[in-house]
Length: 90
Image 1 (cartoon, rainbow, N blue to C red):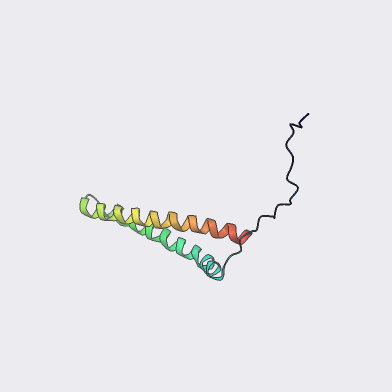
Image 2 (image 1 turned 60 degrees about the vertical axis):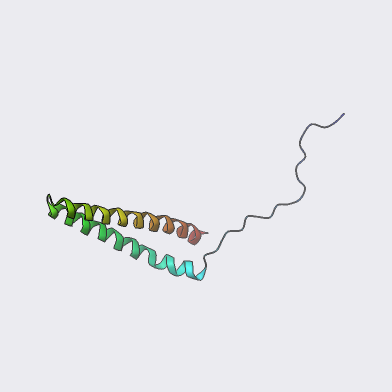
């Protein structure tokens, strides 16, 4: 009679290698929080300008476009920081 139970691989699997941070990634990690703070400051300043712009539609549109661009940059920096943080903890 045939045995229906699966047979476990007898070959040991190599342990998963944790990726180390490269020199450039370490340098980037060391400065990324400063970049994030700069973008946050730009967003705050632009929001303050928006509140002063009143009903100047053209100025408000320009400032809204700037905030959108800063928000995209901020999101990218946060995503990159998260990745680098994981490497740093490895």
